[in-house]
Image (cartoon, rainbow, N blue to C red):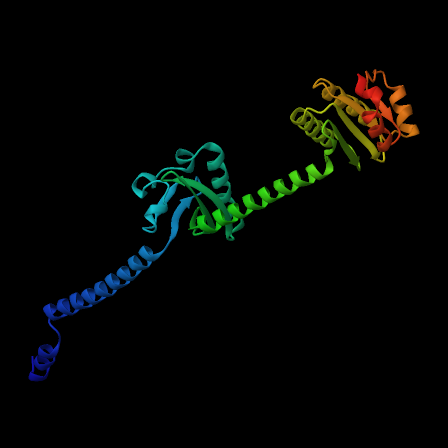
Length: 291
C-alpha cells in the first residue's frame, strides 16, 4: 500500500463515526417527532370535538384523546366494541346505517344525535368521512347550547300559540251577561266538533259559576247548521239544563227549523226564538219567571 492509499483510508469515516452520525440523525428526527406529537397532543386537548375511527361493522377502532367529558363511554371501554354493544338497537341501527352510507357513497355524511351524559342530554352534530375501504372517521361537535336555545325558543313559541289559541277560543265563544241570571252566547262562523266542545265547556262553566237561570245560545251568525251541528247544539243545551238552567236557542232560520224538525230527537224543553232580542224578551218575561 503506497502512501496515497494510506491517506485515503485514514480520511474515510470510521464505523464508529458513521454510527455516531446515524444516532445523531435519529435523535434529531426523534426530537422532531416528539415536537410534532406535543403539538398534536396540545391540539387534541384544545379540541372540543369527539373523534372516532369506526369500521364497517360499527366497531370502534380508535378514540382520539379529545373532550373526555363528552364521551358516552371511556375510551378503554369503547375501543373494540360495536355500536350494537353500546347503544339500544334502534339507535345503533341508525348510526351503523350512516357509517355504511359513508363507505358506499365515498362522500362526507352528516349525522345528528343526542346522548345522555352525566345525567344530561347532550346534542351532537358530526361528519363521517371514509378513511379506507372499510373504515370511517367521525368528528362530532357538541351543539347542546345552540340546540337547547332552539328548543327553548320553540317551547316559547308553542306557549305563545297556545295562549293565542285560548284567547281566540274565548273570543269565539263569548259568554255575555244580560242580567244577574241571564247569559247569552252569540256564535259566529263555522261550528265543528272542537268548537262545540269549547261552547259546551264555556256554557257549563259560566252557568255553574253564576247560578244562571237562562242561557241564550244565538246562532244568527252561523252560516250552516246541518244535522250534525243541530245535534251538537241540542246536546249542549241538555248538558246546560242538567245544571238547572233553561236554554233558549235563538237565530232560528227556516232551514234550521226544518233541520231540527227532521231530527229524531226531542228538543225537551229547549225554547227556540227567531232573534236574540226575542230570546231576551222571553227570558225576562213574566211567564218564564213564573216557572
